[in-house]
Image (cartoon, rainbow, N blue to C red; front, side):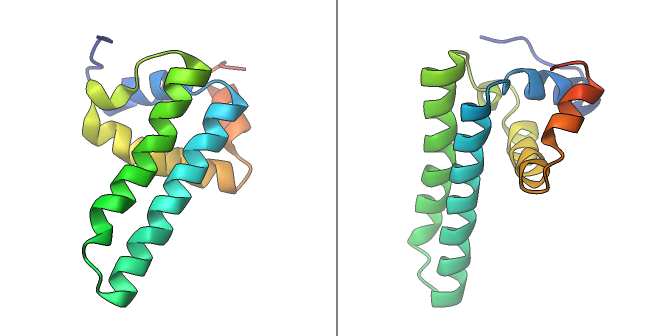
Length: 109
């Protein structure tokens, strides 16, 4: 199992490093986006049975990316809450075209 980070400030660059390949970043973005669409649909339609599906959609794409593309262990297993927050942070950076700049800030590219 991967080592634990002492705080979020140390965790974030490690999280970015473990999402180094564009295919991983894309799969994470697809999963997070799909999860958000399902969540929004659940809220709008009051179909609360969709809520678990939103989590499954988000995590399935991410875990497939880690298993098949990065070949590493998802940070979800060592820091579930920080990983969850970071998925949305990376999603926002991906959508706004700033992910590369953020990775360069930590000398990851």
